[in-house]
Length: 97
Figure 1: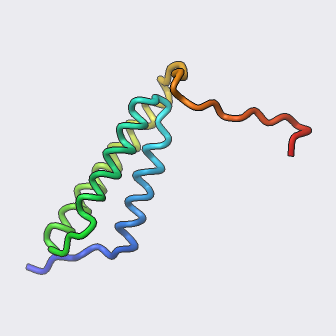
Figure 2: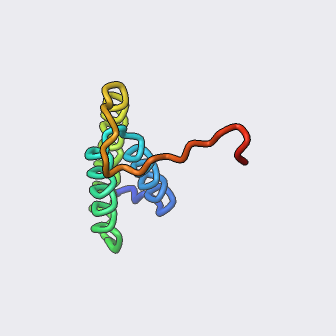
């Protein structure tokens, strides 16, 4: 049985998609948790050479990305107040360039 190994480009695209989706959470705690989790998960598989493990890792994280996207949408719908530890986004007025 031949295992299809994902290309490094597709793994990087999956990684960036998971980071982008993690940043879209409105809740600080969820956002920071999923950013840390994504980085540590991909860091753990960084030097893996086994095609079976790489394929399983990629397929599992594609499914996780779909769940993460749905969760982010729900979190955006019911997002609460900003916490004190969150950085304020700068306010740009019309005259500011």
